Image 1: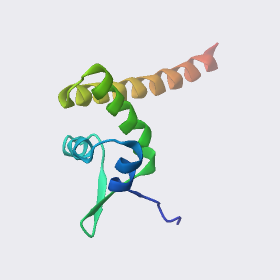
Image 2 (image 1 turned 180 degrees about the vertical axis):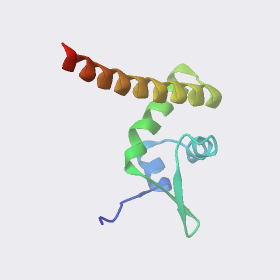
Image 3 (image 1 turned 135 degrees about the vertical axis):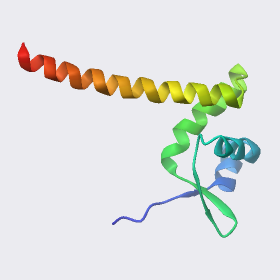
Image 4 (image 1 turned 90 degrees about the horizontal axis):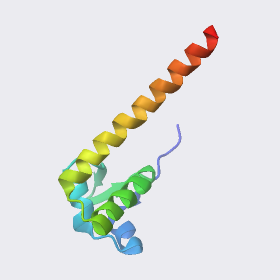
Length: 96
């Protein structure tokens, strides 16, 4: 089993100029998950795209955390529906 690599949240914030408070709030709303080890928080690198998207929506469009949560839920539902449509198209192609 491959060892997972995590990024220290403080390091990520210092490189991207995203405030740690913003990251903490994302975590509190359940929009991202952190691993806590020895009083430090670590994030999964696969969450970087999601965090940057939410940061841009927050700073450029002024969307608050509740709005980000709603958008995140809608995006999840959209992706699930796209998968379902793809599966259904595959089934339909079998009968054509």
